[in-house]
Amino acid sequence: MRLSPGVPFVAAVLTAAALTGPAPAAAVPAGDTSCAQHERLRVPGAAHLRSACLADLTTTGLAGTPYTDPADQAGLTAAGTRLPSGVPGIQLDGYFPDTSHFNATHGWRHDAQFVIRLPERWNGGLVVTGAPGTRKQYATDKAISDQVLARGYAYAATDKGNSGTDFYRDGDRPGDAVAEWNTRTTELTRAARRVVAQRYGHAPRRTYITGISNGGYLTRWQLENHPELYDGGVDWEGALWTTDGPNLLTSLPATVARMQGTARDEDLYAAGFARGSEFLWPYHEKAYWGLTQKIYRAEFDPGYDPACPGASAGGTVEQILAPCASDATYDYASRPDAVHRAVSRVALTGRIGRPLITLHGDMDALLPKAADSDVYARMVDASGRGRLHRYYGIEGGTHVDGLYDTYPDRLRPILPCHRSAFDALTAWVERGTPPPADRTVGRPANGDVVNSCALDGPGAARR
Image 1: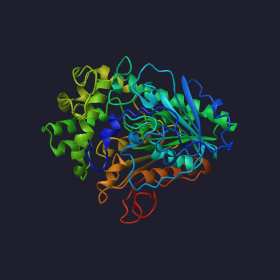
Image 2: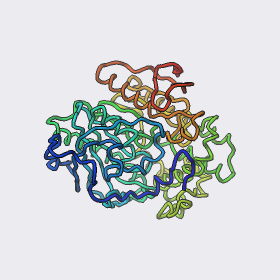
Image 3: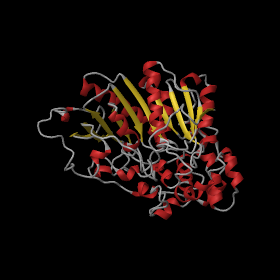
Image 4: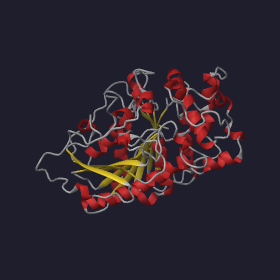
């Protein structure tokens, strides 16, 4: 089922990606000793590990092999995105001990899966990320892994310890599943740093964290809670969780009410959704709003409507995407203290300890900028950490870049701005060159909008 020519979202939700067996291609040619004895590498704490010496660690070289999963990347990048290739090295796939079994990749049916990639030509750095949305460890291979590998960074990604639309079933108490995302990201970062030391003879000189959506949330949380592990991060429209709101449970109920015909456009504007983004709402009604509200409400407030979604978000596309009717009147502010305590377990504070660059599209129709990154930027400032933060609003940016292919006259991809932001971050950290001041990055009238983004170029304006 394709809900839009731009983003086959449901395929990403439903595809199990149970890839098995070694790849018949992508092996390093005979006689090449660039990753000799790769099988001796160990990932500290891993319960299972598989290593491979590959001729190309990018999605171009891994297409058709079990070392990536195009279905889990669906919709995250625009069709015209240029992707680097030709990066030989070592790939480690495995999992840490866990009791849940949502992730069927490789036929393992075991959560806490990870991928670590170690390029032959290493620049001394490591980039860590966690999966966006409810996706898995290969989700950002095109959006992040390809580019950083081509720059010489080692790369590590986690499935966050649970995935899929039933992720909220993991854990024993409300908030456990999301809390595990943070624990698994910390766990992988520590392990990956030690793997890098095994492979190259010393620990990474620089470790960066970045991510999209839920991966952006992980970036914020890690820099707040474990700044000792990182040198900086790039937050690409991270989800905002705060104890008393705003959060997803304060902005999304109005969208469900609109789906039920009981809310006006003005109610969505009041919840933070941008005027001018209305052309994106029909797609989000079909693909995101009802599903997202019900599964996160089930994670933090299962007592509100135990019958919906219950033991599963659904077994068919229609069932999964259908909203819970009760969520149209959900009022987070009036819910019991226990619900707010569950959210507080994963809440952000703005107290970052390392440099952070935040990007957020002004046409984001899932995590509206006004109720998310605008608020987070104020939290950072209020905590006295504003000198460590830069915030760029991306004019025409929306939550998934694949929608650009449907609306090229109204949207722009955020990925090229992410690449520019990552370069700005490394210059800030490694050379002391401050990034441009907070601003709105205008949508260019011409040029290669899919593959270029000047954070301080024409069309950029101070916020």
